[in-house]
Amino acid sequence: MGSMIRPICLFLLGLLFIQAAPADARLVTRAFDRDEEPDLYIPDPGNCTSRVYCPLDVTVEKARVHLLIRHTWVGDLVISLRSPQGTTVVLRYRQGGSANDINTNYDLYTPSYQTMDVFRGQRALGEWSLRVEDRVYGEYGRLKGWQLQITYDEGARSATCQPLVGLGDSGAGAMELFQNASGDYAHAAWAQLPFSAYNRENGETRVAAGDVDGDGIDEVVVGLGPSSVSRGWVAVMDGPQNGGQVRAWLPSPFDPWYDSANGETWVATGDVDGDGRDEIVVGQGTYRLNGGRFAVFDDAQAGHKLLYVKRVPWAAYNAYDGAVRPACGDLDGDGTDEIVLGFSPFPGQGGYVAVYRQLLGGEQWQWLRLPWSTYNAASGGTRPACGDIDGDGRAELVVGLDSFPTWGGYCAIFDDAVAGHEHLAWLRVPHIDYIQANGETRPACGDTDGDGRDEVLVGLGTFAPNTSNVAVFRSDAASTEVRWIGIESTPYNEVNGEAWVTLGRFDRAATTTEAK
Image (spheres, rainbow, N blue to C red):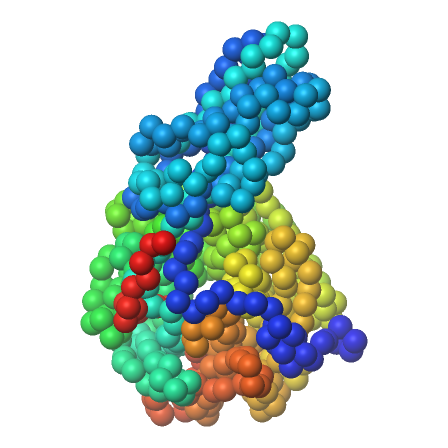
């Protein structure tokens, strides 16, 4: 890899100089787009009204509007925002004279005709409306689009994440939770998937964590490996220290032929609709007949309704393998998570991850490729994770690699969407024996120490005997270090040792933060 590789120490130490959010901060921002089709005509003279529905029953801390209008004489316009409680604020009153167009933000700190501060303390739930009035005849324009952003106090949620490790094939459906006391990542609890037929045949648990019911505590979502009995199912469970009880079994979102031929599921969680509760994203495994698909299930309050099934627009890959490995994260800082998709090995043509966004009136695909031609030619498999490593409120993208003996053990780190997803650095697992034999990396991200920046945890693939299954890349004010988490199951470690890792907030915070 030569000069492409920047030492991980330099990268992580550089993050120390970035101001992180206070550990006790609970303010979050969600974005909502207008309901109507884009490009709304503004009568001349006359007015038009566009509406946005906010599904969050929360108290407004800050309200912000991004506005885009095409108009040949903006001094003709009066623009106002009305809350669900009936409060109206005039954002603009015939300012700008003969200037063309408006593309700006209005919030507490952006001058407007009237202050946005009057919305603070109001209930956000309901319909917000934007009114644009043209008061002078002779000039024309259109409302191209607008977005409402609501900032609110998330309430009592733990400031730190706990690592949860699912075991691979022959792991008997087991998951092990670790606590972060004194930074030692000690064993906390075990849980087991209550599916004895699957546990005996495969038993692999591919874990993800997310708050699917909006109660401030994360649930565990489990995807299953290939099996004649798994049938494409996904399990939603309480965390191990909360009993590990199954809350729901989600049926396969794919066709019966896939369920009988493979049936494995890859899972992720993320708030992809901006309502404050996590959805569940499910990717299918290898399936050349009808591959490249992923599905999104709604949150628990919506009954985990199947929202949609999509196919990756990559025909050659779908016909070659078709497995889809999802992750979720807010890459652009708008309060809504994007879906990131990784893929199985596709020698010579692989090395890609895809970022999927649902936009008003359509969807967007963005493609990134690993900057490592040798690996892409030999394998090209990708395993994505998302996390706010630098504490700027936007998630970076961490991409793990498939098995690449002798040369593997790496994860690539890309910056957030605002920074153009610039490739920042390579992480490498400091385990030479494992790299020589396998080198596969399975990353996850989460804040394990409450400093406002996510750590990167890397689970290892099959390697026996192996008692150190997860590497923790951690940085603080004093040092940059790599720690290890070992699975407390000697029989499993001796025959397999692979680990699927996620991070979740499985406890409530000791204290709550009051809304300002």
